[in-house]
Structures are given as structure tokens and as C-alpha cells.
Image 1 (cartoon, one colour):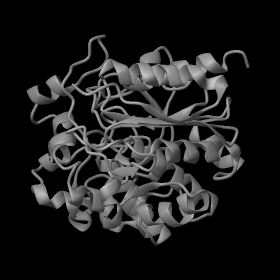
Image 2 (cartoon, one colour):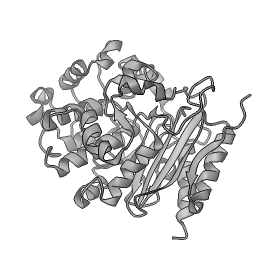
Image 3 (tube, rainbow, N blue to C red):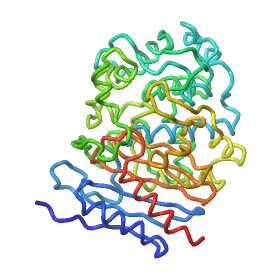
Length: 387
């Protein structure tokens, strides 16, 4: 039996409650390795890490360890889109077929980047089988997406596009801006901030990547857990979204996955960089005031066609879920960000000047906000309460 991992890093005294909750999570056995960072008003006030970066628990989680954060990537991609909008490089409301003519097939001629980002396009999954190795072939996958017909009339409903939004937004972005989301992120967004977040990882960075360990538990408190439904409905949108191709569920520890670009799911980074990116968004360093305001504007809300529960989205970000605290991340009504499958979380709260990042390599079973992340968020806002 391994001893309780030591918590490393720094934490300002005001946020001691966050450190104590992080230590509690590490002692509980629900973590393998993890890190949490918080930026407030542009200053790094919490930067902690602990545990192991490998399944055998022989390699310590280091200060510069990075990990795949799945759909937390969507929020970083959305920041790139807003940054490009500030520069006049892309248009949210121009039909996607203007940039990508082939996409206008099968009733998709009116779909805009705004609808893609807010999960209203209807192209939530691919119906026909996709070869396993095709996952790593960008050109093949965007051709498949372009030829797919929507699951519902575009713009009439919204439903979480778990993976396909990465190919859709990514291809529109590439054609409009002239580079991939990953390249734009590297050159225009993270470089000025010296952040360590990647969509498309170079081989020289592979040794720093923590191994992900699969979830072994089911929710104990009645939160949303959709995998039983997915298994029961093999022709349904949920199953197709997660299991077509099947390598979507089996590739996260492979070099091919780390090397490819999928702006909805395969970002690699650390908590410090996620917090820095969101912190820069609310401090005026990364985005204009107009762009920041766009981030928390509701684009779609109500019953989610895919998840079959209420969700509320901005342009690429999950927003506060009113009446569903267990599915939200910040107390501020203007908070925006995105959780990742398994547990990771990144968000900004403009009202508190907060940028928040949490990453881990022990996967949990929750679709939205994981209880480990939620406990750290609750601890943070308890620390802020006297303000």
C-alpha cells in the first residue's frame, strides 16, 4: 500500500481551505495524481500538485507534468475562437459553408460557427461506422463530418456534441484563419503567456504526460451517469458520439492520440496553464472587453437532446446551470468554462477575477462536473466569502 502522497507547491494563506480540501482528496484514495491552480486578478494564488503520474505509482507527479484533459479542451478552443474574433479573422454568424463548401450538404447549409460552438448544429455524432485508425486522420474525419446529416433540424434544438464539434470548429477555423486551432493556440495564445497547454503534442513532450487510469466506480449521489443508457441504445446518438470510432474510448494513453489535433478532446496541459488562460481572459490580457462579454452570453439552454438533462451553453463554454449546483463550477452568474470527461475542469469567473484549473489522471465516471473538482470549487468560494 502506497503512503498518502505529499502535496507540493504554493498556496497563499487566504486560500488555505483549498489546500486542505486538496489534501483531503489525496488522502481519500480517489486520486492517483492531480494538480490545482487558481489565478486571481492576474496573480497565481494557488499552485499545488501531488501523487503519481503513472498507473504503477512509481513516478511522482511533477511541477511540469501535463495530462490529457478531454473536453476541458473545448473551453481552451473557445478562447482561441474569441481571440481570433477580436482580430477579425473569423465570423460566428457566417454559414460554415462559406469557408467549407462541402459542409453545406445534407441540410447543413445554414449552420454557423455560433451554432457549432453552442451545440445546435445537430451533427452530434457519425451514424455509419468509422474505421478505428481513421480517428487520427484529420482529412478523413472532416470529410465524414461534411457528409453527415444532422440528428435534428439545425438551430431548433441543442445537444452536447461530445467530439464532432472539434472537427467542425477546427476545420472552419483552419480554413478561415489559415492555421489549425492547435497552431493558433501555440503561437498566438499560450506563447505570450508562457503557458503549457497543447492541442497536438510534440514527441519531445511525451515523457511529461501522465498516464490516465480508467474509472472504476459509479456515482453514489444520483448525478448524471449515461453509460448504461449508451450501452442499451447502440444506434442512439450517445453511443455513436462516444464509440464511433471505438478508438475514441481506448486511445488516450497512445502516442497517436497525443500527436494528433482534436480541439474538442485531446488537449494536454497542467492546471497552472488552464488557470492562467482563464485568468488572462478575465484580466484583459488575452481578450477584449467585448470578447469577454461574449463568453458568458447564453446561446442555447434547456433540455439537452443528447444528454437528456438541462444544459446551458455560451459560444463554446458551459455556463452556470441554474438550479443544478452539482453541474456548475463557479458561484458567479457570469462564470464560464468547461469540464472534461473523467474529472478535469477549467473556468473563469469575471465577478471574482478568478481563473481556475484542476487536472488529474484517475478518471471518474461523471459526465459533467466531478465531485473532486466541485469540492475544490466549493472550498475556493468559502475562502472568498469574506470579500
